[in-house]
Image (cartoon, rainbow, N blue to C red; front, side):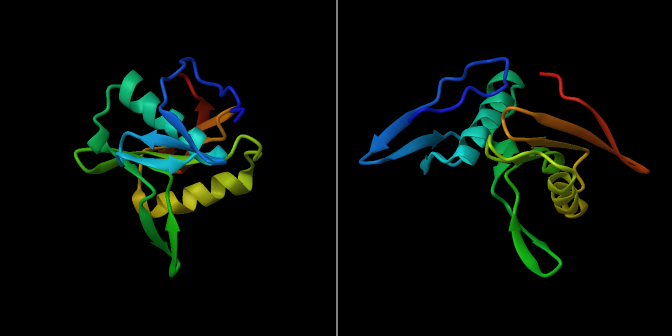
Length: 144
């Protein structure tokens, strides 16, 4: 399986295995093997980034949390917490998915429930960073 090189400053040491024609990646947070989809490739980069580069405990990283929004159940990709308080919401897209205003609005709607201070929208190649302010979101370049 040819995986794209993502736009991270580090190369992480992932555990990947093959079973017949499918590939799996080991998730440190859930302690299980997950099918290696393009979106999961991006999500696992963020998990490794926050754990190994930012020193976050694995228990502070919440993956695929269910969220009820306007009566429908949604799932967030990654939530970084501090003492159970939502700090950073990370929405992951596959590398071939373009990050648009519509994609950001989806993430902002999720965050209207979670109230994280920061949002990262990423397809692994491009990263959009926004901080929540009183009058809305303030965008700035993401710095590793």
